[in-house]
Image 1: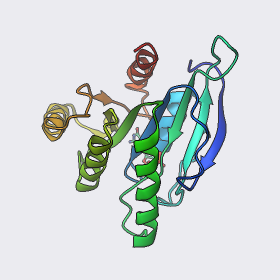
Image 2: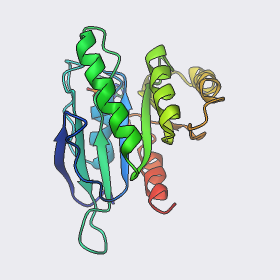
Image 3: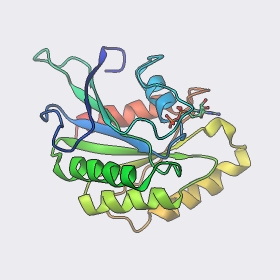
Image 4: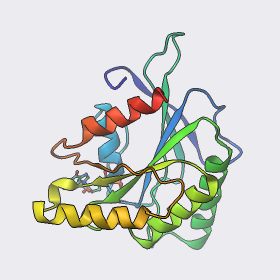
Length: 203
Ligand code: GDP
């Protein structure tokens, strides 16, 4: 799946402008600067699938990518890059339109198999992440936490971060219990994340 083609197919900036549902979709979301672009590039083996950017909060759209080739010659999986959230300099109006876009997509997408929520492994779950969890729980969309930038954690810091993250998810109905730890710099955890995604296709 990850060795095959991965092509940009659609950008959606408005809830009424989503591409027709096709194969299963997995989406990636997280706070701005969490390392989402780097992770998507590492995951798909591309240097520039998602732009690694130093200006967080810029892209306010859902980007759809087609992955793999199925038995009928079509795409096997769709990857959806959601706009980063929690960037303070973004105005209220933008936050409202972002929330509407997310809500409409999350509530209405029957083919959405899982949302991977990226959380900075050095910082852990923040209030804006909790707001995202609330939205996902309300929408009954399965989500799984990916702790990023794991290369920056000392070995002694890892277990406490896992504990704290598990605690934050403990009473959340739509949270998938297994955590994934990744580093786009060292490549740690990328294989495990790919395995979780492939497994989803067989569920
Ligand atoms: P995005 O805003 O979530 O798309 O984040 P980016 O992928 O643009 O990364 C934000 C910053 O974090 C950049 O300076 C990256 O070099 C850095 N970064 C991304 N992934 C990692 C990682 O795995 N380890 C470390 N140490 N830094 C990372």
